[in-house]
Length: 287
Image (tube, rainbow, N blue to C red):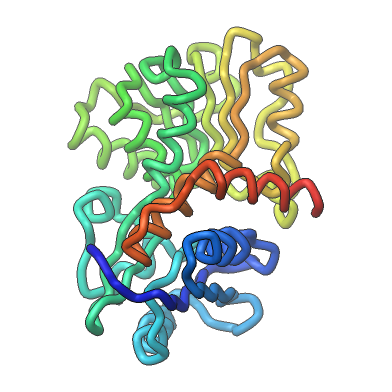
């Protein structure tokens, strides 16, 4: 999908997102590319809307001439019925984090899965076939389960506070990758005894959702830990993992990579993902 426009109005739709760094990343990369990019926050907590109102959000995005918008917690699944179409990965995942608007039509994409996969494959290529515990089976967790299995993980065990959601994601991934490669973990502590990697995909640990879902003595130094939270860049989970001696990946790489992919969809221009990541980390360091 391409566009020749040099001016783009974008947005982020979610809840509790006032401190998001997405506006700064997209606007700065737009300037670096010689484009005028504006990026606005549409926060359900501020504007008082819910999932049932997403149709109006999509309508007004079209009416105001937006090139598209990103979608984050808790609307990645809920926005789908209000879109005109889905890209293949978004249809498989049943979760959308990027909506592109062209010629009055809205198309949903998912850039979370590739944004997550690239830093892991680059930083720890030896880990892509490991057994993994994934905590979180929401919109982000769905994309990460797909990414892990697509990379070649030998087995992914999934835990969510809502057990039905874990079971549904296991069934969904089993259809595409084989039922023998994915299972439900009812208990995090027990599951961590038998896996080589841990991926955290819940809001827990964000500045707005402080805490940690893993006790330090559940981890062991042979494991790697990937927390997709990027604000703060060093979460309590990563501090505990580092203290034990685990290899760690923070959420900055994923945040920049998924944003870079979304930027390409919005503008038709391939951005400099490393530049976007450097900008994000500089912003986090000053917060």
